[in-house]
Image 1: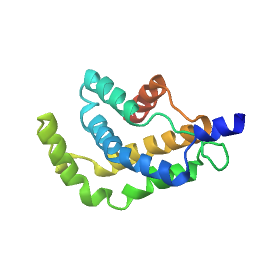
Image 2: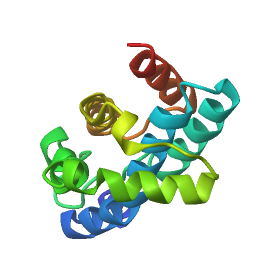
Image 3: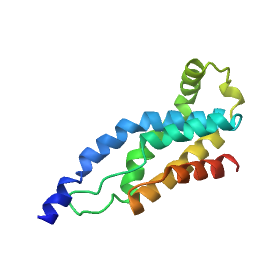
Image 4: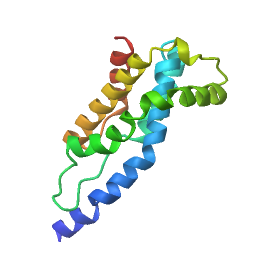
Length: 151
């Protein structure tokens, strides 16, 4: 009976992958906003950290083994899908942020390698923690973002 309860509160790998993919665009946009706007305005940083937390802060255990997904599986879902196209799409991402946030950020003025590294390191941290604990706390998201932005 306990096993049935545990597996009913778990996800299969395919459904989890689809679920994480559905969160990816918002995660990336919020990370971009944190990098571009969060360094300038502490209130903005707090807002975007809270938003970032809201989109992806936990995962369910997998049905087939009752464990949290591996770091490699999570990286495949969250990192490997955007890494190859990051530098090709950053201009359109910044244009969208300018429209949504009423800013005038020039993509030519952005250190895109630093932005990529910031996003990659956050997602790697997120994958590590989700695979080990199944969740991250809001306080930990704020701390990690502060560490990454202050580099």
